[in-house]
Length: 440
Image 1: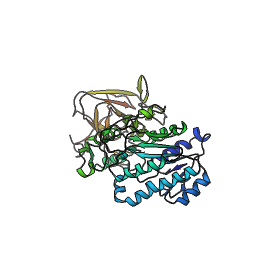
Image 2: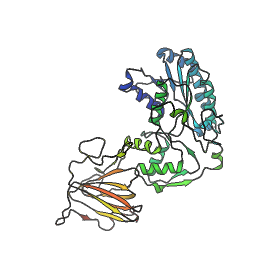
Image 3: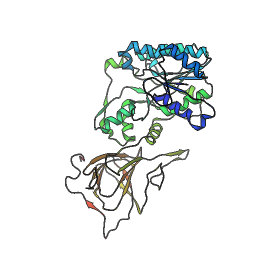
Image 4: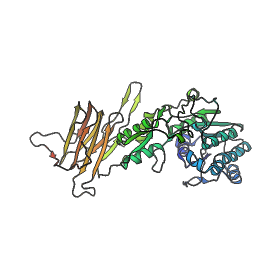
């Protein structure tokens, strides 16, 4: 039974356990409170009689408690509500787990630590700086008094759901709207992908693990460089991420360097603890990058990895997991030694192209020149890079130009027609086509 199965973590656990590989092993039930999802049962965990009624009806052998007010500022501003949900709600569930001989799995946080003298292992003394952390410490005490429990301390949990308020989606939404994103360079932690967290929790449950475990991503990074990576991964402008520092008040109410040791976790699981790059690769594959010009497509290129390195499918035919080309007649590569070099600056009448930056980075500007198109005269800017490779599909009659942003950049182009020197299908852009957006 998953409490909070409509939330960021609970939803992933519920989805994984409901798939065909687990159906023969588990009957899976989930609850929600405000975010209604079909197939879940509404439950107010602060209502003891309601909790007792649901648990008696379902009689779960394992209860995974993911519901909470998780935003520290909201907990500070609504202390009474935070205590009621985070502590009293947990207490109600723990009491019923004891009564029903049910294993309790509780999701805690790196906010139980003060961020000083890390890295922290599972045995180190807790010392929260904020009220959210206090509610988690108190809840851990309650859960640890049950007969069979598992406490998961995690951090910086992210997903790319359309309605998500995760840090990753905050960065994406801000940069997509051409707004500067200020990210502190002095706040360090472990970004964690909700799907990877869910898979690890399920393995720990299957192994009948007990006690306290730190479960986060393997990369320890500050929020500024994290935000820069997000921009690159989702083909946005990393220069729009600006460095800032945490103000004095905030630095006293959050752990600034919550470095978590993962040795205990890694010693008992086979599921890979993903690095930040691996998390972003996985999230890119689950996120559709929208381009506001009809027929233009931007698609992340998956990386199939093993001990020898990685392989990416650049273009294929009739595959859902790679850019789709019905016709290819020419492939060429541009080795560009200098940053600030401008290439293309034209459109084609017949030729369609895919562009991939293999090394370095470049800024592309596209303009729809199809008079019959509903996006006629629409401008769009896309940033491609070799660190997180993506394919940009530019159909005919779309003006396109790019400028390199790094030295020694390499651009691969895959064209539907071969170049004909006697009759080149190239229409140079006239002055002003790319407007002020292409600032060179």
